[in-house]
Image (cartoon, rainbow over all chains, first blue to last red; front, side):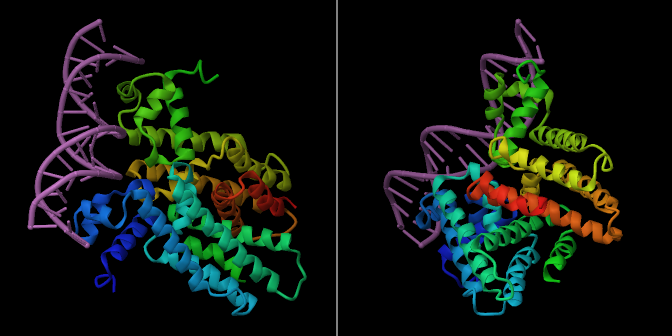
Length: 183
Length: 183
DNA sequence: GTCTATAATTTGATAGAC
DNA sequence: GTCTATCAAATTATAGAC
């Protein structure tokens, strides 16, 4: 699939992998070129600058992430929460990878301006999605402020969980962490 | 205080600031030299390589962090938890800074080997401290596995909270997040 | 679209004078 | 301990041929 994809896609795939494992500041056009099988100059034809590439990758990631989640009301509350957690878990299980925007959030002070904007959008959209899920839980009648608190808590827990898991036993630690949330 | 400190300390102070705001891969000896008021070559006298500097900074950070926490049984359960949270909050309030080891945890796949080891130790020691605090809560008689789950949860929540807060409204978001934990 | 060639800058690091 | 001088390598980026 990735081998038949067009060059722009291959470049973005490679860049996404590097950002999620090593960070935006720890990969070069040389790395990307080697993976894709082209020369570094060719990358500039598809993405004028590294910042452009980074922003495009973050935008695509956010789109795909929310696309995979689907509308907040498609499944039951419990199913949606567990699907959301699974999205982060699969992120990790595919090679010790961070959430792309979690990594960018950590590096935010060293990112070019256009990337800062795009990575903020990921968090805003995720929180809005979670808000709606929590508000849909008809059992308790919670306020929008209470929903937002729950959303923030789960998002932070998962982003932080990826960091801590990578520094310790990996998936075992992450599973131990999320088991409480699924119970 | 920092102006009368010896050069090694000044170098570590500057490095710690850069790592916590921009990350290990986003600062150079040039940055450090400019801050301290020396030439880049002089840094190598105190720290042979960048990896040595990074490891020294992470070691000092871990020591100081645990030193500030003190023994796990010095205060009541509620006080210790709120002191632990406050340690992360002050981390943020001093200029949008990440927990140093939270940043290194995110960047871990791009770090030199000696830094990986040191940054793991931070998490191990933090979890041990939290375990003891949770076990000390005499109300409920929890197992060591249950304590570890709670420790992991709080640690991940705070590390992730710093990332999310930096990407959104900053301290307001972080305070909203921890208000649930202090209640 | 991809290449070669090259530029301009930055990087971590070393040797040796003071 | 700090400096000057210098290094080799890497970085992002551009110009222009194919």
